[in-house]
Amino acid sequence: MARDRIFLSPPHMGGFEKAFIDMAFEKNYIAPLGENVTGFEEDVKSFTGAKNALALSSGTAAIHLALKAFNIGASDRVAASSFTFIGSVSPIWFVGAEPIFIDSDEASWNLDPSLFESACKKYRPKALIVTHIYGQAADLDSIRDLCDRYGVILIEDAAESLGATYKGKYTGAIAQAGVYSFNGNKIITTSGGGMLVAPDEAIVKRAFFLATQARENAPHYEHREVGYNYRMSNIVAGIGRGQMKVLESRVKRRREIFSFYRDALRDLPIGFMPELPNTRGNRWLTTITIEDRKITPERLRLALEAENIESRPFWKPMHLQPVFQNAKQITSGVSEKLFNKGLCLPSGAAATNDELELIVRTIKSVFD
Ligand SMILES: *Cc1c(COP(=O)(O)O)cnc(C)c1O
Image (cartoon, rainbow, N blue to C red):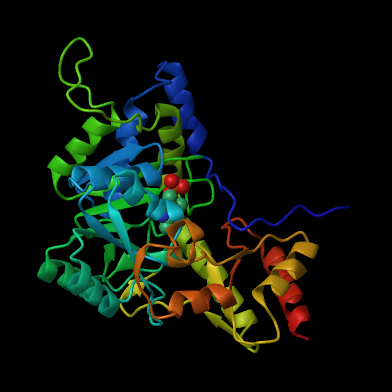
């Protein structure tokens, strides 16, 4: 009998989601807003400690509105982690600003503060979008100090790091704005969605206005500006409320899966993503580097694929993407090196120990 495919990070419902959806049906609050949306925003606020929250149609939309709410536009420069997913930086292009891509450091795989300082001196960015890659917190104190010194607005891309902490505080809820994603493969999912959080209520209010077609306060539809249709539906938010109940257990399980891989693969020439002191990553994906020149990540990926196991190369850094070939960048080669030797392993919280053992056996067979 054919075994089911083992996916990288499939949705994992906790059992509480349908009750919230049923409630929306019973009250005919199918769309657009309703108590699941506000309930979901409250859940994320009380979990992360964020002061204000706005549920949106995607994480990308949340980053877009963060930039808009801080009035970032055509004459501005925005620095960003180069080692990230494109949804993190495409909003810079949406608002007509100019991106400056900053490389990673070895210690965190995230934005290198010293390279960011060079960018501040050379290019005077108005904002920085820092990604907490694969759920690992970036070096936020150093980054925040630089942002204060050079007057840069700090936006956390916590799309992958919901539930991860930096010095006891939840990523996303630390800077002037933070963004979460509930896309299908994230640590929790609403099938698709995102959230913007910010300590300043005015930022979230401005984002709300822009997310609802910039409709002025009048009985008819009055518009002085052009906005977007970016809000989350009440059905989708119901899934989110259910998922928030299991977030902490998902983090625990993903961290357990990471430890399992690290222990099982310890004798092989394989490296693992670090974790900065005083941080707790959510280990959204277990990510390995292959420190053996004869074995490429692609060879490992194909060996896993032959067993119907999904794995994936690392994010290709933005400064290496054809679409950004002329963009400004401050690089050190670290993210390029990671891209060339990295592979993301199946990390779904529902993965069984038997499945994990099969994955480990398959990896070991390539090194034998
Ligand atoms: C998933 C992701 C996004 C975008 O989120 P969507 O909800 O898919 O729009 C942004 N940044 C990072 C780092 C991501 O992983």
